[in-house]
Image (cartoon, rainbow, N blue to C red; front, side, top):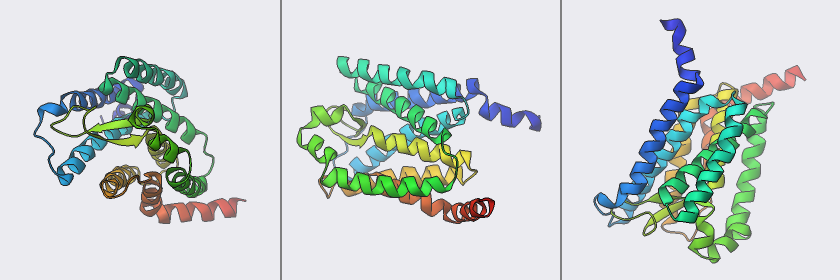
Length: 248
């Protein structure tokens, strides 16, 4: 029996079944959040948003075993985009959220599959941190925010607050944030880093960024996300870097 366990964890049909269950929970929470007790304080709004983050990242976690299955990911990529666009057009936010997360996960895992060295994670983390900070405070993201919720909503996942419909009160995380979550998660799996701790630290970084956003106009999520990955895996990344140098 023990010899069958790894295949059950990585077999596409089982991974997809678990992902489908996670997707159903994510959609159900977003659709039914208004029936739950109202988030009447900042702390409650952060908790609500954090719960939605947990469900979204659970979906990404369950899809991560598809990392070696590029064909499936290449199907999931346009399928997720199509769902996101269609549901956005008809105004069904739970479905749009799902499509965006599916698209982001497929994109991130496909990018992770192209990485050749673990040290590239450090380079990516540094690059996206600088880029995201500049974008939020000086660049394209700042412009999009100033254009209003209709524009920024197309490029974000709406994390609903309890007691409200998702178009009434929510916290927005960018689709790009979920792309890099999947990229880092896929890289952690690819290079045998601390996968579980990496996922937990990244999800927590999202919650911290959300909490900070209540006191600031906008907070870039990628710097904390990247820092979480590096902190949890610093020793392993250093060891791999040393081996890469010795190997030439």
